[in-house]
Image (tube, rainbow, N blue to C red; front, side, top):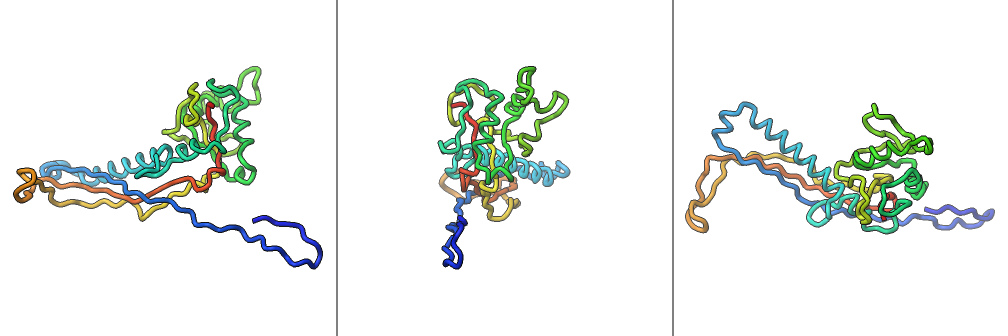
Length: 245
């Protein structure tokens, strides 16, 4: 909403904000592990091991799709959304070259002030490593952390998180090769229909002759995992994306 100064005893104006419900499509993610009855009997702890693998695979899928998902049949990743919006892209000082010491300042400055207080950074380890090496004898202001440190944890006092599916450092001039995202991640909405569920399919069957005859057991069972989840940027302007062109 927008406030205003008004004269004494004058009627107050209506400063009500425009309220809108964000909309994020929920998609189905699935994982299936078939196995024989023999394996079930001969492998102690097989069920718990498969449950762990399904959970790990689900986490890895979400990490990927929340970053680079297309939005078609799957979540739309933050990099996908921002790369498509020219209003939030901040070009490096010298297009087609590795970023320099001035570029982190530029992308931070471009982020509107109202989003800075809750901002965080997202980047690959390659970009993080390159940022760590910006400080030189002539660029003392760009010194961050030294080699013994595992990760550059803060930029402009804001937390820096690793995005394993964020692009590495590159000299590409493609606007979709975003080097780093900074912004208030409350503007990226994740919608869930419950958490991940895992069910045991007791008997798998198949037709001996395709298209005819009854389906018969194969001596197999299966762990079936599924979840309904979606994600998308609901306000691109709450972010800025550093790009090479």
